[in-house]
Length: 340
Figure 1 (cartoon, rainbow, N blue to C red):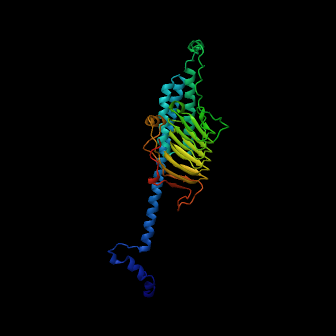
Figure 2 (figure 1 turned 120 degrees about the vertical axis):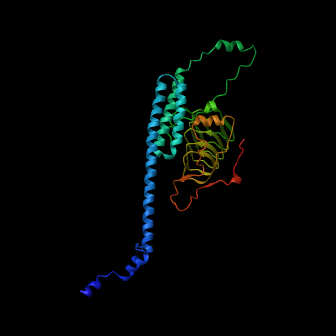
Figure 3 (figure 1 turned 90 degrees about the vertical axis):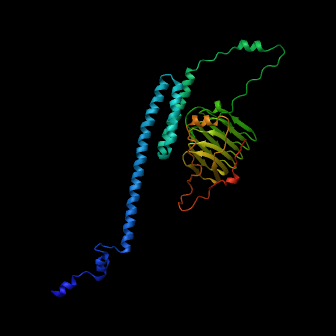
């Protein structure tokens, strides 16, 4: 019996680990302590992730409800023939979308932008319906012409409006397109009245300098070479495709760049910029000012305090442990601060 009792005794090493020298309290080996600490850190991480997900879901639900109410209010004002009040509510709707981009899923942002663009188009159409028809006084024109005087020249035509060949990426279906195409070595410019909530296209330009002073709805820059594009705040998205050796100064909600080489971007963007099939592109903060720019920012709904100019997603570079070689930040000493 005595021998059997000895066999049932705990090993000496275990007794030493939890024995009386620990003051009656069990002391775990260091290896087990480390494992327990890792387990607790994992539990804490899972709790933080769940809390962050709950915050995102709560923000998304609040946005959906608020956006739906404001959209219905704009639609009701348009139906009642009150376009100016609708324009004011639409501006608030656009600002709500801009401020919510950080916690919305990409498809929610896209749906919100499509709704805003549709309402903007309806607003412009409603304004046209309610606008009094202009009466032309041909008789007055005849009286102004003195005998022997040269006939008056017609007013300069508006900048060429590239035709919309189908629904290209980034098109909003909003107000008619405007912009410039197939020009070389020229100074090109559009002002606030021409740009307000319009969809602007710059296409196949060579060595041109373009100034867009105003608040467009969207901007697309395609197949341009050696150009400088200065643009006021864009309410929704900017798409740059197939460009090279260009400098672009833009402020927008979303910036997407495809098939572009050797170009510099000075941006204010509320979401992360996206590049794909690009190389040698670089970024710096938005750096253009002109008379009326603050009013244009206000009408665009963009938040001047929100700028992710240095956050770029490269869809061709998925390695998380090393930076993409396709884009970089422009060194401060090389940044352009004065464009005019």
